[in-house]
Image 1 (cartoon, rainbow, N blue to C red):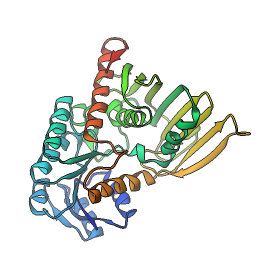
Image 2: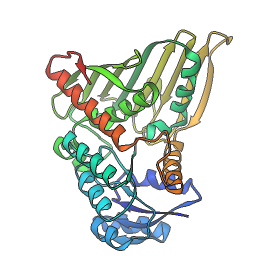
Image 3: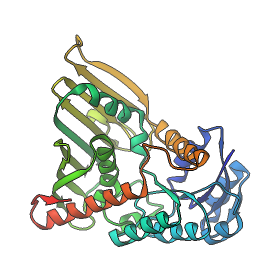
Image 4: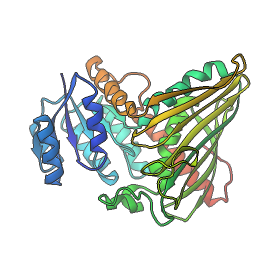
Length: 347
């Protein structure tokens, strides 16, 4: 049985718990949270030990196999560093691992020096719908066009309207930015998972810092060019294809190649609804529509982390600390491009 310790009990904890529940060989043995009500409630579910602070958990639970860091963004660096200093070799941390690029670099170097296996929780690459897109790349041939769009329900003065209980998310200093950080980093990681390293970026942002609207062009080293658009509109419960969906999330990734087309539409970042994948290849009589359980992204992510613990090294296909650095660096370059009126900036 893989025994995990959790740092933090905010809104995202329930989805990581869903991932744990979907893996019979994984359990939660300890949770640290300054919010005693939510922390103890989660502990009761697993019969886990409750600690008020991350330091207390890290100092008293040396028998844990891994640490899952769900602290607010501005605390990721210091709590991951503390976990490394405490001797833990396997850490799964929410993004970003640093609130600025200097913190990210320091944490990558520290983890590698200590031989700590630091996995970053970019869960989209574990979504079976997006995995279907990756599988299709082998048969699409030369890629002509990629479009990745995420539109969230919300007024322009909000960054993450569903997280009123986490005010740090609306603070650009504490969260590391606006939608380019909250949403864009996930999208960039998924695009890197699909197409590899990034060569240049061009980006325009609206509404300053934190930024709410992102319009970017991303050129990959293999020649693929992707359009990335992120924004909000004040329509409640906006879902895929502009149909109602509780919560308000309209995300789709489409790829057109010389041999066909594939499109994955995801109705919620949490995994509340099925991902619809439409594909049409030139040797088929018409489009094919499939549905995949989006919530499996959390189950698959935890499974990959657990497998890495069992094998003694993180498994291929996860977001490593250096991958997370490359995502953070791309975000930084996008902001630089915006300051240069959308000029192409080399990565």
